[in-house]
View 1: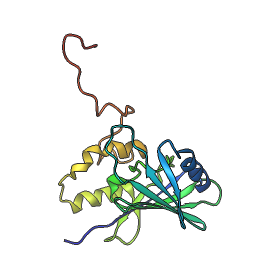
View 2 (view 1 turned 45 degrees about the vertical axis):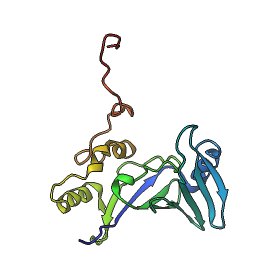
View 3 (view 1 turned 180 degrees about the vertical axis):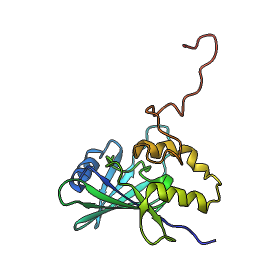
View 4 (view 1 turned 90 degrees about the vertical axis):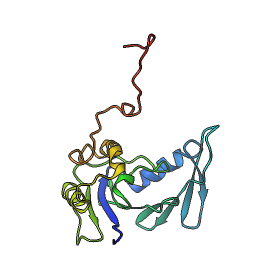
Length: 186
């Protein structure tokens, strides 16, 4: 079976300059910045008691665009400023990994701009069409990671709701355990 490569494209409200500022402001809090020939490398900062892994992200400054490459999984974000304000983002990686990396500056999505394609397609299609074709390709079998699709919907204004669980506005609702017993509050 041929490996399917996924590509996504969307717009954000921030410019590259704003994203770089956010990266620098996260230095010492969320990550540690190391300068490199191409730009910088972000190293994950872990709280006390958490097993440390070598989690890092490369930020390469390439003229008019910036590339963010996750070293653990190899996902690539290419960000290019638009004429006026904001930027266009291209992502090469699986759908469920889109904007899910911990070593990324927060980005504000511009609604209705998410499109997707894979290496079997000729061009980008609206995300609804992409998801329909994805479901057909999988013969209706669910991807086990899709049950966490509410995280993707949280970042993309519930535009993937028919295919992935909706985000209902409470980030912790999926992790909460039902409280039972004599002393639980109702």
